[in-house]
Length: 299
View (cartoon, rainbow, N blue to C red):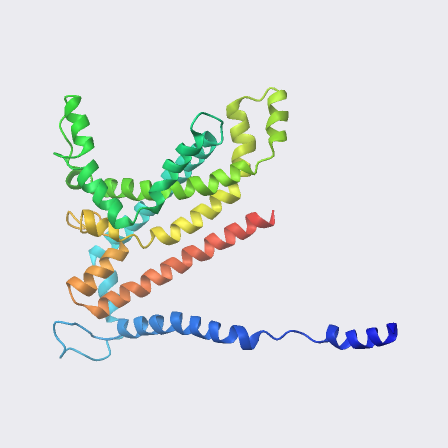
């Protein structure tokens, strides 16, 4: 009986499950979903294609790219993109780390406070931009203006005087809850015995934070930076609703520049060239971020 069982199970062990017929259609659809728009974008970036003048056609070569890189608006938008991404990352990582440590401490109403702190992440970008534009930063009807007048100070027209700072504040308000959620989860996974041992050895709160909590959060911070960077490179709704890229090009980032070229100037070829540059930039950033996180996970 055992011989029969062994001989019957031997072929089963030798057979390998072939999942290609099952995953093949999904992978094919996914590749088509990604490759077709990419190929069309590259193709249009090499063509003379303006919606206002259909007679201007033909192969443009790298003319669209040359026009793009020699346009001052492109470099201004690239600078604004980097400043926006860097500033929001700094605010959300630092603020999220401090809030995660704070909300990890026991205090009355902690669960409700956590809920309110995380809630802004679920507000749509367009709605968030409208709230900040009309209810918070409006120089006459906004909360900031009312507080300034109550203190005897002149109200600030944020979107006229500090447009990029205003956009950074709005985007940071949206993404701070995400950083808090990830980092709070990481803080809760910290071994409490380490903190207790450090406390018994005489380590103060700051020493515990810098030598125990912060190193423990390094991997979670890397994940937050990677995910936020990928999404922050494509910020659009907040700029469109509040400043429309202005005044001038003060808040025009790369995503808004592509929109303006395609749907305001009707230059599909130039907008496609900008799209290709944006794709290359995003992939370069993602490559280095993924490698950095992979190294941290191997430690």
